[in-house]
Length: 86
Image (tube, rainbow, N blue to C red; front, top):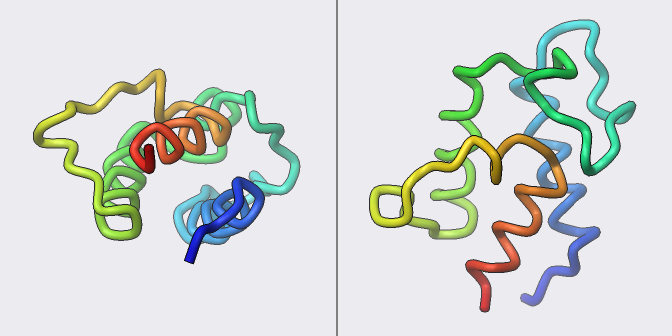
């Protein structure tokens, strides 16, 4: 199935709800808002995002490396998924 960016965004938001800090609603964030700086997640949650992307989108971060910049916002993560799908 070819997912649209919006479908990927909704799936990502659903995942982020499972790891977000209490009192920091994911729905209040824009695509360019920084996830850690906003208080939504802590820096260790980046590892959970990596595991989600590896499992869900078959990405191999052991080869490509982890860039906090790419994983720092919803839009950055969606862009990364789209790059990997090409």
